[in-house]
Image 1 (cartoon, one colour):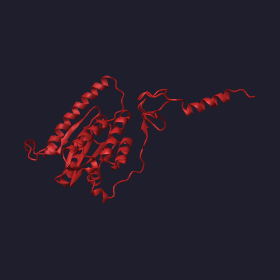
Image 2 (cartoon, helix red, strand yellow):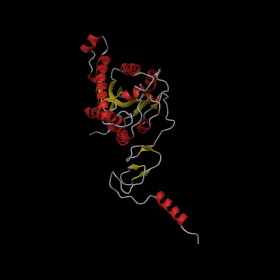
Image 3 (cartoon, rainbow, N blue to C red):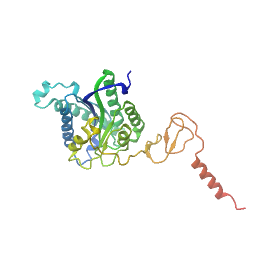
Image 4 (cartoon, rainbow, N blue to C red):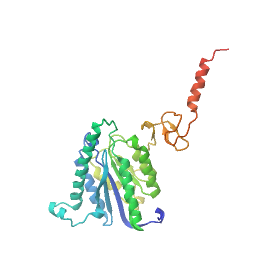
Length: 302
C-alpha cells in the first residue's frame, strides 16, 4: 500500500469527518438545548459544502453507549425524492432522520445500563467514533491516488472517560501516522485533556468557546478553513495542554504514577507485577526510601 507521503491530494477539495456529541446525559444538564446546537452545526456543514463542490462531509454521531455513521455527502443525491417531498435540502432530510433514530437507540442502551447499576462517568464514546473516522479515511486512501485532503473535527461536550484513555491515545497516534489533523471544539464546562492532546499531537486546532450563542461564527472562521488555507490565516494557538494520563488499574486521571519499563503501562500505585505484560517489578525507590527512614526512627540511640 502506498504511504501517506506519496498520496496526491486534490488542490481544493477537502474531506471533513465530523464527530458529533449526542450524549443525552450531557445535553440534559446544559443551558443550551441540543436543537439549538444542531442548528449551528447544520449551518456549518452547509457552509463547508458550499465553499467548494469537491468538498465532502461525513458525520459520525457519538453517543453514550454507541456511535454510528449519520451522514455522508458522497452518497447523498441532490435530486433526492425525499428532499422534494419534504421541501428540505437533502442534507437536512437524511441527516435528521438518521440522527433521531440513533438517539432513540442510544437512550434505550442507557436505560439497560442503568438497570445493571453502571456507575461509569457520563462520557461519550469518543474512542469508538475516532476509530470509525480513521477507518473511513483509510478506506478513502485505498480508493485511489487522488482524493480530498482529510481532517477530523470533534464537537465534544461530554467529560473525558478515563477508561477510554488507551483506545483514544491509540487513535491519536494512528491519526498522526496518517498525517490526519484532529481539530477539536469543546463546548463543555470543563476542558478536555483528550482533545487537547489530540489536536496538539496531530497538528490540529483546539478551541473551547465560552459562549455557544456564536458557535456558528467560531466554526466557520476557525474550522471551515482547509489545510492549505490555514497557512495564510491566524488560528488559535494552544496556551496550555493537559498531558495527564489515566492509570490502567483504576482508570482515573493521575499527576504522578508508576510506569512499566516493558510495555509502558501506567499505574497509580506500586504493584509487584504488571497486569498488562506480566513483568515483575522491583521495589519502588519511594517505598524503599520510606522504609529506610522508618528504620532510622526505630533504631535506638547509641
